[in-house]
Amino acid sequence: MPADVVAIARDLLRCPSVTPAEGGALALVADILSRAGFTVERPVFSEPGHAAVQNLHARIGHGGPHLVFAGHTDVVPPGDEAQWTHPPFAGDVADGVLYGRGAVDMKGAVACALAAALDHLAANGGRPKGTLSFLLTGDEEGVAVNGSVKLLKWAAERGEKFDHCILGEPTNPETLGDMIKIGRRGSQNGTLVVTGTQGHVAYPHLADNPVRSVVRMVAALLAEPLDAGTDHFDPSNLEFTSIDVGNKTVNVIPAEARARFNIRFNDLHTQGSLRALIEARAAAAAQGARFRIDWEPSNAEAFLTAPGPFVTLVGDVITSVTGRQAELSTSGGTSDARFIKNYCPVVEFGLVNASMHGIDERVPVADLIALTAIYREIFVRYFG
Image (cartoon, rainbow, N blue to C red; front, side, top):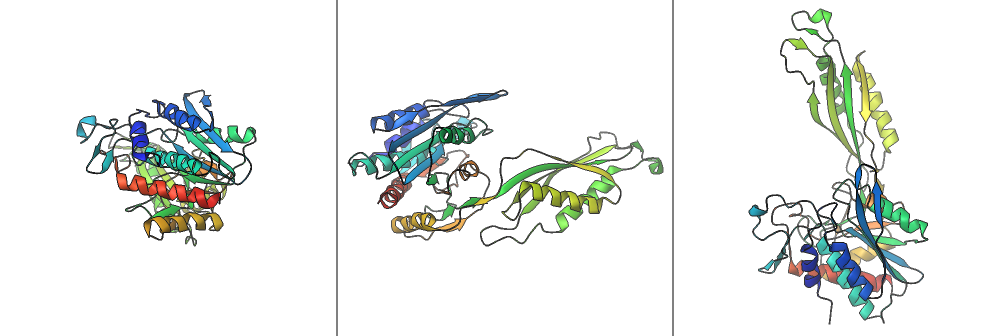
């Protein structure tokens, strides 16, 4: 009898694992996998200034190929629970739909991968023809300091070498089978700071108004595209998100103006080359204004898993189960794939993302069953 994916998903949803709380979710996964014969480890990582986070590594089998399923069991807060049709941690099923925080992001996909793994092992004498692993963190929805980035390093230091990874993030915009993520844009935050000279508005010749310069420089940075995009990436995009002077007095010219921005960039750039480009364009528009750009640290470089046999395998399986040809995409925000790509090729495929992080987050039971079938068939073909 196939593993009961709905029961696994409901049990996971009943664990209140709001970042960084483990909430019993990883303990549940550890119990399921250890009973199936996996060797399970539960490393805890900590760092000054950040909460300690529980993680999970499980493996079964020997030698290659080595496929790892990665994901997270932490969830964002439910918000006002009174607004939910069904309690966010009850795991209710109504009219063929499973409700709960994390249903699609991403306890549902974790449940599907667990069920698929149990089915695959049951059909193959309890062992894959290679190695199957799980890497699950409790720190994806938070600051991502004590989660996947350290878990991957920890596993590598113990000799784990992964050939390919499936990350179960909710990738589909509308229907299961819409989209596979084969890369992600990078993300870089910065603040343009223009320094002037404070003074009375009635005597502007005795002051230097930084607002004039920051407006001119913002316009210049927005006027010229960063690039034209690539075959797999949209053009890089810079968005200013605030312009502030902190001035509560209408008759005082401020001494400083600040404009904060974010850039989502493709693989034509690195963080270093992008910073140099923005600084050069800002200098050209400054016209003598005193300015600097304060760059924030970022662990999100752009990357691409080039289409090849593994991407084709995943796409073919999705088509065989859903009848849809999944788009290969690099859209959206960042994910833990930005860490995984340093260790092995990674593709992302999970549930429909329309309700993630919202009130009444939910997934049709039919999608859980279909995604389990997709993961199960991926295991069959990968280890075949």
